[in-house]
Image (cartoon, rainbow, N blue to C red):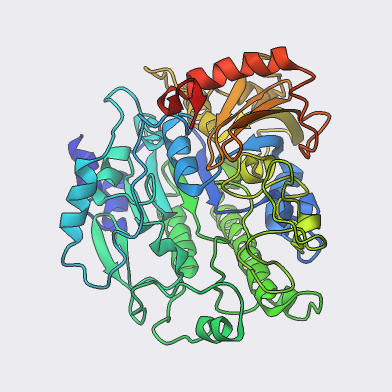
Length: 512
């Protein structure tokens, strides 16, 4: 670890800026890169993809003027998806990281903080020295690296790990359990615990579900809930962009929005008078609207500083859609067919919005939700926007979140010393070229793993019945027809690859 790197993480943001400005005066040969990673953001929440109850003009503008991917995959849950993104490995590689439990910091008493962090560090799995994390690639190319919002890898990270991953600056939650509350008593900034005045709830003001008269009153009881964390994160983001405008930077903006439980300080004006939506649905829509507004603020700041033509913007989600506006008579748990009352099993009776009553159709008509290896659980919105540098088009190639790391290495001319699971998608992004036909993507989930090929084949393992299902996504994007009996040879071919890729999760020849 370099001396400069250690100094970075001991100083405040302004002091860090001073050192970089007076130290390495690197010219802007490479673009700034901002990766906006929304949480639980299904494609159907965007008006560009058919959302009818509210608009998302700022994210839509990126889609309409950039390169949008129609077959992009994140992960099935937040912890694995972000670990995969930052390492370049698919989420069946359990030997590349350890997904720690959440809730380690969920106390207002912080006397045991160091003890808890040491416990996590003692059990961590860290990549070998030459096997780089995403921010380390940027550091090698002379970038300042920052992450704001949800931090680290897994459900809980430590301050020591944030340094080891390669973050020069960070600000936000180190615990995904705490991040589900929007009024934290404290957050972390460059090794320091920052107390948030007026936020006194140990659970960070986490709301309750499902929606009832009692949970509504509790949600709007603002005692101990003074400062809304998304406001803190966007303010720090704008501050960071302004202060580092003279040096190439990589900023991973990881807002908790619109991850639930639902929590928003005010109803957005656009949906306030929408009589079709219930109160809880208006609040959830307001969270999506707030995130879109924040994207607009970032774009406006870049333009005001003259950085808009030298900044690559990426908008993505960590995984597919999830439901937090549970309300009797609208969306009930356990999820079931609103007409037949039959429970969804995501195999013979799959979840679809039009059968469940999801008014927002957050998974854009696909099958399944977050935690599933069906398309609605793992497919994400993904768009790259770089004004004047990449031509707008829709890319139909199959890509994954873990492709981002090798793509960035390719873009910056940084040679990787280890082979990652991901590949560079730069040819498809910049020149509209096809990716290799034999390319495949591996996805894990609570239902089991899946393999998807660039030709549109998908084999999923379904743990509920301990069986495999085969789909042709080009002809059947909604995964309605299991064709494994028609194409047994293709299924066996893909099964062999899947078993090999998931060798840490195999028992007696089957995935568990």
